[in-house]
Image (cartoon, rainbow, N blue to C red):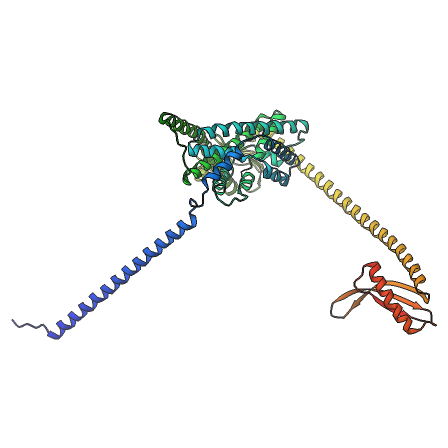
Length: 502
């Protein structure tokens, strides 16, 4: 057999293989370099983030503990400050004034015992824990007694919005308490102190719920009392929990015990206290979250699904509980077919409302109870519309009267000023006649001057008439003197003097 392989072709194939191999090596080398660069960038990024977020190095453990222990105690001036701030906050709730309430929260020393409890739990300090709990009780007692006395003496006529906002916790209230507690311990542990603690007291709104609890106690409204106190207690617990986490993260020194048995007993007590404090709060937090999800999904369902031509949704009520939450819809207009209501009930599961009861009032069969309910609701709506209309008319007329009063006051003020000015000008004229014997007449006016380019200027102008026999040189000299006197007398920057002898 004859070998048909061309030597040139073999050399060419070898060259191609070698080139491909070299190309693969270059690609591999570039890939390795890219991987190395990515590792370097990642390491530098991690290092940068560590330096950016590092807070342990700047923690002043000794002064932070001393400051918190100092703020824990309620005695002397702090008691008076607390009482005054409670009165101010109660007045703010009475006036429905957020500004007054915020001012009261700025001066209230409420955060001390709460932060103290968190620090004690985080450092296994049983003595500080007992001290903080004692002063926390003193603080709560003084606050509720003070607000109760105020609202008993000056009870609210109606429930203001600032009161109603503090009778039930929401998801946002809990998150504010968590992040507020973290901000409080982080800021309090710095060497350079800041105004974060007052800001945390305002954001977490510890004082208004206490004052609202006093309002409920003064008016024997137990729903308000327990709801507001429950909100305050929940906020306080989550601030303590956040402080505890912050203290452990910052690695505050733990309390050292000489007796191992006492140390073991104290730590067991601390763990039990933390569990008793945190676990029910987490359960409550979960319930608040569930209610928030229910309200959001129910609103979405009503907004997207409850539509029918000729019918109008006039009211909706959402009731959340652990057993069977319910949605009540009140519609007026055309009757709602039963199959439409059944379709709405089937669609509830599309919005995560599987076990929710849907009740629609105003539907097909014209049930007497439904009709009575709708009639009552319709009458209530009409009454509310009438009240709103009368209120709008009253407000409008009141505003018109106030505007008229302001105009009358303005005109009376102008007339009074003109009268004073006239008397003053008459006196000035008599004084000028005494000083300048050749002066026969003087007039004053504010002339408006235009340069025809849109600019207007008002110039105080004096028109002086001299005795025709007066020397011109003397008149010019006395004109300058009169101009200076007028500037001084009437507090003018610029005057213009026009003279005549005719």
